[in-house]
Image (cartoon, rainbow, N blue to C red):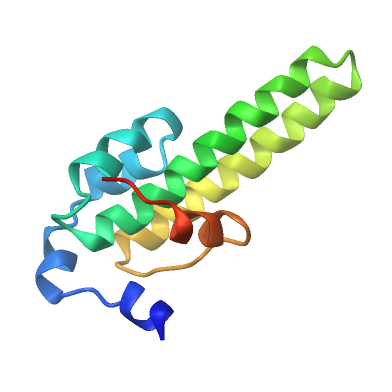
Length: 115
């Protein structure tokens, strides 16, 4: 029941969701801008921005892999490929006015409270 209400967006919110906010939402550190700007103004933009914030948190975690010699660099490179594919997919879905809850990222974003 909670999920249904979480994914309900008004037509007006979808119309006001311009492409630049989608680009910022999945632009790693820039995801913080729409996440805090649209907390109560536009649930659709806020939904995508929260996934971007969680993705940015994973980026920071994966950055720590660089301190592990050799294998850490490989893991970091693989994580960057994953981050890039998630960002591109998220931006495309945003521009198509669709939602998709990425595994792990989406469930953590749903629990994230930004006020």
